[in-house]
Length: 292
Image (cartoon, rainbow, N blue to C red; front, side, top):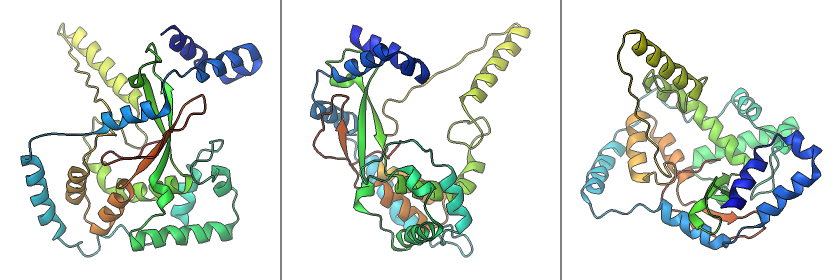
């Protein structure tokens, strides 16, 4: 446990501090190499965490019935959001790419797309439009490289003590951003006004401000202020695909777009790596959604 605490204290240093202290840098590197469990053990634990098993078949039966009914509803005229991406949409998605990231399974750096010539960008935009039209994506986009990061103050010898960080292919991230921009125009007005997560221009700072204001208002009125904090374990990783499809069909009028989104989150797999260079075997996922 002491090694894990020391690791996180070192990782909390500013990058320039590490650069100016070579001894500290080597301490960080040495601790990252000390992973007493195998990559396969951590990967297996992640698969167990992400497994969603229940003996109650009634929710599945009800959702299947709803899916059957919802898929029969055609896309209303003039409500399609799966038309070809325009060049300005593609440029906007590229601007949101963060340079300096390592290449993933396809060995494509963000800079490759950011500094590509206009001919290549035009070709890639056409390629993404072809993916949308045919409802197909490259197989490599379904694979993620998961990096295991030790959790603070947890024993390094326990496979449960590692937080998974997924690294996705850069072209896949661009495709995600293009689709998100289309979907957000429909879903954002449906969110409660108080919601800050997953909304453009909002953050946890908004929630802290609201909570602080509620506390001050209650104090002024000589009343008590209460708060309920809920943390969902592995929330992204246990998303039920059938339930997600049902919700998307209720929210999005374009059935083709729902098909595309579910094609992107289904049949995914991952390989896990640790700080000492270990690699797990390929693992298949039956639930969850990709996140980076």
